[in-house]
Image 1 (cartoon, one colour):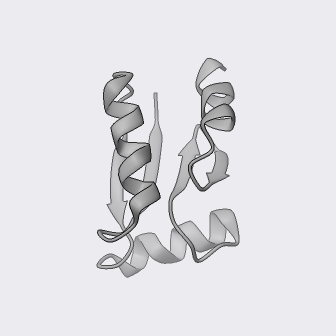
Image 2 (cartoon, one colour):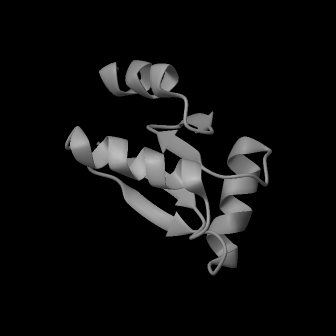
Image 3 (cartoon, one colour):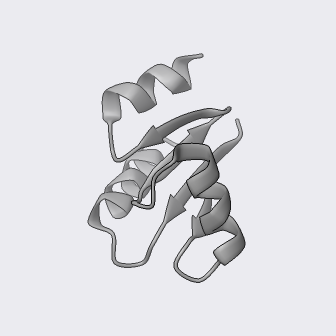
Length: 76
């Protein structure tokens, strides 16, 4: 499953998303947009947002830690 998680080190909701994925054994790739400008630009183009977390689950973009939306996207 191709999941991209765009985060920053100081984001509390980012920590919650990572914990949720780890607890549910969901593999993901994390990108720190505070230090990776290429990924930050990619995130903004996908989501239209500058805030984190942004989760990309097979092209479905979810802004923030929205468990219900994440679960729906994972079931596909």
